[in-house]
Image 1 (cartoon, rainbow, N blue to C red):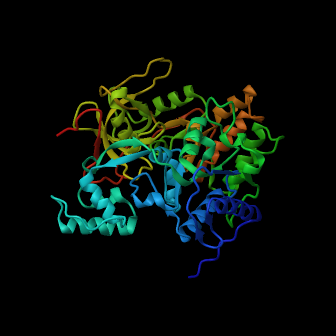
Image 2 (tube, helix red, strand yellow):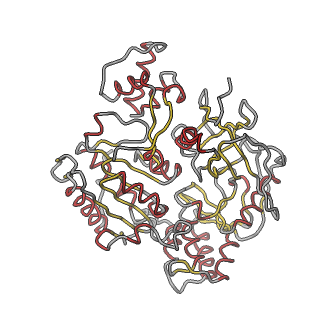
Image 3 (cartoon, helix red, strand yellow):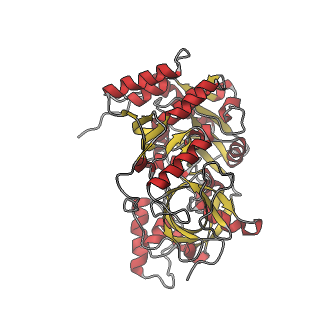
Length: 510
């Protein structure tokens, strides 16, 4: 079967040409397939903005493909060879693991900003394998590794282009070949950043320090980062540095979720009008549904989205009670959200190790069970390339009407977690789930309060972000009630490697 040729809309074509012009000025000529060395001290910056469905991701993917065809090498945070520093390179970034995994599912080799800012330090012996795999050295002889193991590593790298994955295929663990992590000293070349509306000023400054050419892709209708006065980093750019996509692309059979998202742009649309529109869509298309109660089974993998923290805590408490979860322990299968790393400065190396494996603030995690030492947990990090690991953990269970959370168990130091059955809409940005539940009573409260952010009613910004988290199905929950679960919590849907990595602030268990 011959696939139809990809056709850009007029505004996508204009944005493509703007990015191509920027790259040409930086020595990467897509039209004539010609590369020239980077010019030190020269910088380029452009933002491509547009609402959900405007084709930003498709444009990004096509630009990545075009850069690869002219010889620009895509780099990640896994391993960077010596000769790679002299080549023209591209890194595709997202602020969170989940956002990066959404791009990877669409064939775009994305990594997190953190994995680019901090680079791994390889054991010199095993780095010989990495150099061989990337074409920078001869096939090595490594004590303890057979020729068959090296063959497995080579075959894996040819198929997946991942050095850590290839070393794992040879039978090595991350703790065998990665000695630690260090902040990047050498600058990189071209950076594409998806979900740029989530960037704060500090991250933006870091990226400008690292990349000579930076292209941001973001949605101006989303919620701005907390403590940034409702502004996003591309709001401060000059007009000639921003290209806005206006056209909304829809599937051949239309997309009712996108229809609802863009209906919010009508300044005369009130909350009650919007709910009636949702009811009309639900009557026409089962991709939009009205939920009279929160579905507790869905909460185990797709958190219900709320505005207020008090609502989040009450729903989490109801979820745990519905599953008869003990107050002093977690059940395997319970969802968690990483709330940061609690380590003293002297353990900076271990902090970087934890964060580089995916345990960054906001990461979504599924609890698999206790580790081999007190306070350790076996975890599945949603969206991480190597998702399963064991880490020293501090788990905090928040309770309604209580100021201090209950801590069922904790290591002396390590990764901290909150429960993840419900999350605020702010924290949901950058993530997508197949099915999303939006807790409408919270948005109604925001509408009644009359709050405004960046010139738009807050409830509309909240509703826009919440419903565009849904890839295929939206459930608009109208009542403050929770349905009983139809099945117990489980981890059977999560693929398990033979030996999860052990990450801690202490020595791993024997």
